[in-house]
Image (cartoon, rainbow, N blue to C red; front, side):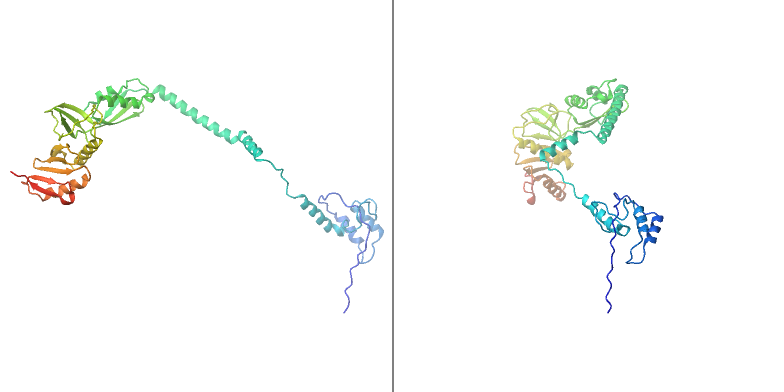
Length: 360
């Protein structure tokens, strides 16, 4: 078996290496000269072609390596690939990660504060928009405060008082600035003079009207004590007080006396449980629509509350607990009784409601 011939490389003098790689490409003329200079492998090229080749690469002395240079083939045309790899490796070494100088937490904190203090275009634009909107609102407010004046006061929802009377108590005068009317002051003026007013809403209606919406309280019963009738609503607010024999046709509450009262305010009792029981009884009786048929309500004993119904029955409720359920049981009992029956219906234990006729 024939041995494979070793390739023989003939050393030749290294020309001066070109400067930093700048994408230099050999011209077509120099390529032709280099091709003509090449002879068969293993033979030395003529000196004149070697000089032309070195001249094409910008070398100084033909055929002589300069000082400090290696005598290899890296700078010759055949060694260009190795030269390019070497330059590439140098570039990779230059791209090592940068080292960051260490800094303390306080320095980072100060740097962050410094960045916050530096104004930015975005912050300036935001401030500009806020100022622009504020100026527009200020202009609208100025125009409204100058040109919108009160000319009318409308009152709705009142039946006990005349609208003109309520409007006069509000304190609003023609010519007042519509934007500067005080709603709280108007409400206080009306509440202090009109005890039947339960709720009040004041609103502006542009361009020149103030609207007052009134919700009135409804009398629910009169608490009789010491020859005086205290007219109250379902929440035990005192609406009026008169002598006996007044024009109000309402259920009478007996057996309890208020310790303090003021028109338009809630009654005050020594026992807070008395007020709670009174409110519960009135509220549930009004819901059941039986308030018109009730004659008297006795609250002398809050654990044994009684009332008369349709002048035929005396209803014993016991305490004020479970009132909706007790009244539902009462409705079933009344549906089973005869029209001529009269007596006492005991609902203190609603699970065992009992009827006992009056004894003659």
